[in-house]
Length: 323
Length: 316
Image (cartoon, rainbow over all chains, first blue to last red; front, side, top):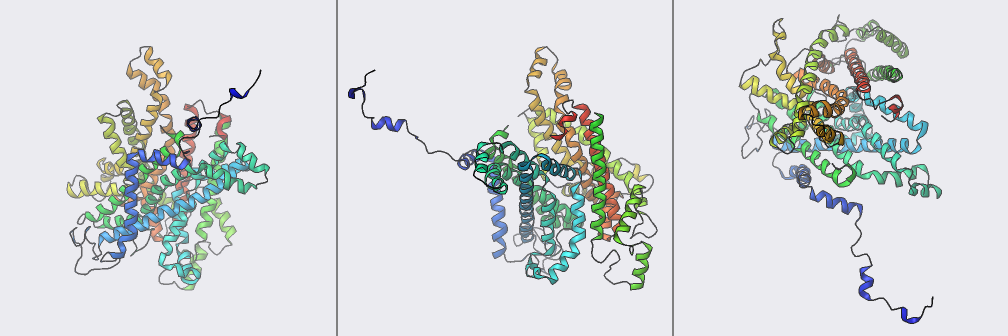
């Protein structure tokens, strides 16, 4: 075959463009955001949560009353313009107490979930990556924990350590953190350290399914340590599922805290969580039912919003799970 | 199958041993011991009490003694109720709690499985929407709020039920006293199982073998009840363990609110009273009951789902 100059023509500008990449490539997060945006209920739920969180942060700064202020002239008032949600038997404004309760309840949900996340990701990551006998042993422990009714140990840990931690906050360097309240910190730690089992199982499953990919082999051949491979290569690839699991676990922590408050071992007065507000309200239920209504509504709306947002996030971040 | 049961049984016994040990050492890690009061007792009295309850023994001896007693099913004396043993207290409360618990599990399954099936079959019709609305409500309202509302509406406003649980011989047999606690107790699980049943039924009726059954000309009733239900109900069986656990947790609150003298009530009371042996005994008792029930559910599951074979346990 003979080739000569006439057979070749320079490429036209238009042709060059048509074979090029026209649209910018879509990253995982852009793609996820696009899917999430189409899920209207999840979007609304996210907006509701944003309003609740911002309200919890901002409102106490310029509201005329504080959560523990007792207004002697305004006891047991029904909801009115002055006190939107009414007042309790000590004359405390229920609106600001509910807002303040949002701080406590939401922070418990979020902090406990983050502690769970940390323990679960490390445990599940190590177990899945090393595999073999180590994995087997670590998963047997998880099985045992899974079969134990953990709520009993939440109660037990709370009972056992509440005096110790109170003393620690009086005497040691922790007294500088006293404004946070020792009981609150104990609840963070107890809820966070007990409910990581589900997260560990999830992360382990994910790590098992991706650890034989070439990029892991490549990292290993370049001499990356096991820890680095887990934290830099394996965990970031499961971040979608991790976010979904965390979102879904926040309502559980809020429920558990309200349950603890109700049986009398939650945060102590004058601090208020939604659970302790509802618990206080129960004692005067026959005469002042509105005291129960608002904290209960707050819990339900928040839990519902987290669940709906979690559904939306799962559809967006984990397309394989979509029904 | 025998190997499966045996493996599970060994795991269960190890778990029971572990939780008893953990519970024992946790309770003994409480600073000050059980006789610390707002107003301190005389040192001599504390010493006498310590001797009486063998709290002056070395910790390890206390532990082996306690474990030995546990093996004989003896939880020791109550610190709060002098002269009564933890066994007596649990023995008095457990029948009541168990009765409400069993009723609640039955009602939950009997109501929520059909609701889930109907929701799935009438997908996106009003039946589906109304059941799903109820189910969503059920998982977002905490049990004690539901109980408060029930008490307010039916006891305080309408006066249909007594507010206070009557412990008279006739009182506690009357079924009407069980109704409200049962609803409050099973609200969450009922909602959850309805949703579970719905999604699992939707999954199953989309499968080929259901189309085959229909193509054979079977009635819709038989297709659903005989062919679809068998597979669709499996997730519900798996969820029975957590359901029972949720009911137990619920019982702490519900029994307190409805003043039902079950073990949940006593447990919450013992936390308030710092009755250490009672807390320890109740925790171990509760945990043991739940672990044994979980074990039974596992075994039942192994029987009804032939896909679970001994080899698969590791993945399960």
